[in-house]
Length: 433
Image (cartoon, rainbow, N blue to C red):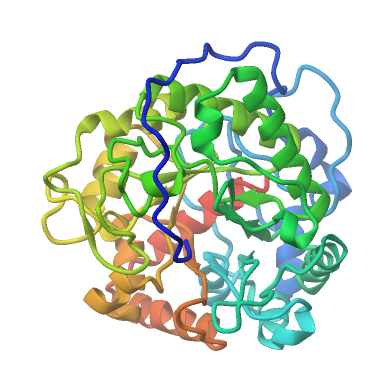
């Protein structure tokens, strides 16, 4: 989901390893106690929009709060503090298969107002679309795509939730800091330093930086950030990571400490975060948005450490599977389409049973090699739960109907078990609990 950028390399030097922060933002608190009686909004509203009766969603297993919390705003999301064993999916038949499939999709669109892309409003209102992702720049014109000003963005995010009839949906963005800053000073938002600069600093500075990003997102109406990047900066010349200053450090201790600060700040603002790009693309020599990155000869298991440690510490809300070929793990498929990587390694060895989201499934590295429809099915078979379609390099206003049709047909043919859809849908719904 990254755009072309000049090859910028920061000066190499020893990074000081900050200690783990103390007294930082409080851990995000589960809304389960608030979702009693009439406040059971999330899934019940989704079913109401579908014309069905309420059903029970598997609990997240997060600890109960020890202190009171303010009532959440409609449609807000609280991240689970850790993954818990997923119960056998219990999806009521009234929630149609097609709505469950649409609920696994996050899509991009063109327009600074929702009326500019009526197909998105229709998908949110009638099809159960899981969410949207907003971008700052239109790659065709260089002008604004979805983000023009702070006031405009808030109108847009509000309109998205109204279209969803207050059914919880993801309103997401890439707000990493540095070059990947969609809410930027050019659009009237505060500046956000790169992860590389933050990784070279102190824990206190990182806390101020993370709180600033989280506050900006919350004020603008976002509830999901595709950050932090926890790839190790093992190749400072990498056009995907190092050359763009997108990594905190080559040192896993620094990456874990800084990512922890960022996750905690987002949770305090009731915003979900995403650890990316599993299983690590810091050694890549290609940006996977524009070609196939093969790290078979350069990747080491040390690159798993930030993911392993953050998951074990309960600091993962979502994990993004990257479009990187790693023959050490799977000789035939990139990580995002690889069951050996997503199911065996991430879920099995690292113990992650929460939501896995793909990187952009319209990326050239994926569509050229596997085809647009086959990639969707491979992603689900690999164990991903959320399917991301940025709609940037290729714009497809029929993306929701097409993907739903492809997956529904695969279920009908027996290729994709319906239980796989139910499992993914249950995981996604846990994020709203």
